[in-house]
Length: 193
Length: 187
Image (cartoon, rainbow over all chains, first blue to last red; front, side, top):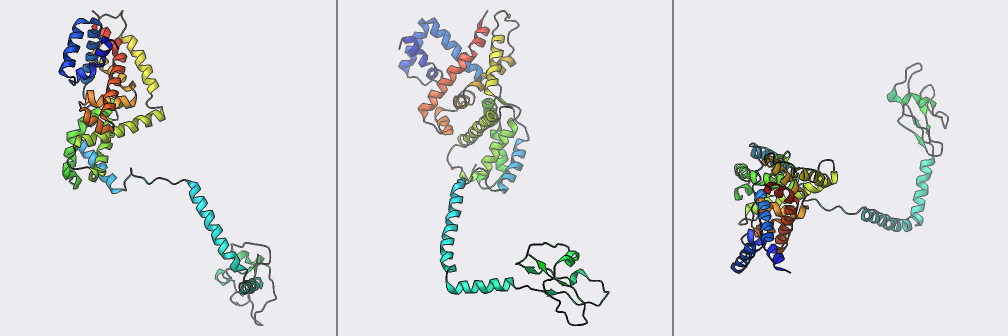
């Protein structure tokens, strides 16, 4: 490294007054005898003087009050900066799948027990049996009220038919003959599924 | 700051009043943006308030607030660079390369030379083209006048790295401003 390079390396420290006394004396003597380095240092110094003399930026006079309002608002909500790291999605998916497999492994052998199967068969029989719900009896000619209609009667052995309007319930298919007492007229409805 | 940590709002507004100039100046010089400086400075003080209990008693408040401001400025630079429709280093480089030859035009007489405002504008743009990691150190040192040790603390870097970054930033700035300064020196 020649003397000019050495001198230019010291410009920053010299500007900041961070050179030793020996370095200072050496650099000053070099600058006195080297016009190129002297010009370089003058430009360096001018650059930093210009930067340092840049006008200060004014901020709003009401900034303290505005900052206080914003700070109160920010303090009222949980910290917006510290956020728990988001775990990758695959962990959740894998964990759920593993849970389902374990649950299935625990339940399937239990379903194979004779008592359980009997119980399930009995339950299916009960579900399959047509259930008929009688609407409130009413006199002939009396207008049937919506409240008199059954909410739903489900027969799982048939096709599905959704009836949302109680009036449409008339279109349901009766599965069994009427069991209403003689002389009583009423509506009987079965909704088939 | 001790009073602010104990929820003293008057102390907080006093603190803002005392530091708003330095914080605003740091942000505006790093971002070369004077229009949004109030909003960004406000955000710095909001963070000071929200994290007031994290402040270590006995440490220098200016170091802490400059750390927050420097982080915010860094995030803002990255956000703007990502968006590109607001602030673009390429656009700034272009602006600077457009302005410097014009300012350094040798046919222009010294009497028609640069006004101070133009010079400052060119310097501001030149600073903004220095890469972010060097720019922050440069602004903290040569505009805000912080000591190297304090800059090291603000940026979370070793003192040697800070010195080297400031030296490199000064060199870059000198090269960028050379045509302008030569022009001013010309008779």
